[in-house]
Image 1: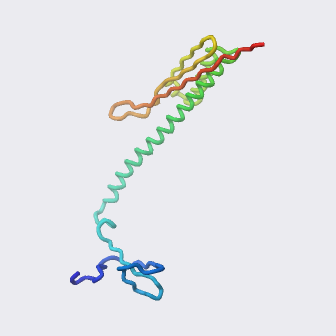
Image 2 (image 1 turned 90 degrees about the vertical axis):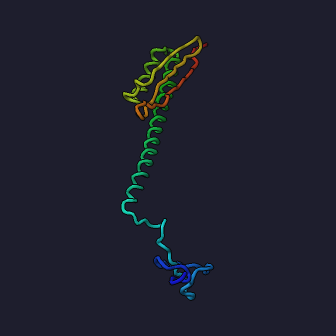
Image 3 (image 1 turned 60 degrees about the horizontal axis):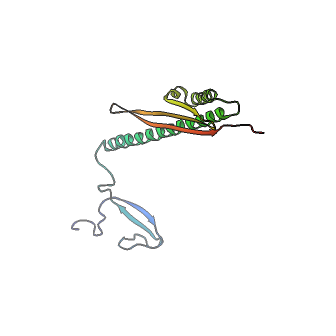
Length: 171
């Protein structure tokens, strides 16, 4: 370059680097200590000179990060609700299929577990019980609300079914 540093290191600050062997095309300042003085340029791409750019980038990244965080939390809550519904259905079917059990006791047990696990959100789940000569079936269906996006209610389905054979004492 005319008027500049012949090695092309005209700007930037010097940073000492210790290397076991000097690389090619890098000027070595001290050969006895094997340290290099490398000038790292503060050219475009490394540092911004526009005031406020970091704040704009922070705002954009924060919005995306908060959206992802919200989605993860809602997914965890939905998985918890699905687990509560599954456990309630299984326990209700077990209670209804017991030797002295009936559909009413199975429904009460399932409703109690839903209220214990979901609180007021238990009203979002509907239970159906049925039986035949040999088995009992308990089914739960519902929707888990995630939120409202652009005026539309967004929700995930809750569904579980359990079938159990009736306990019969046979001598």
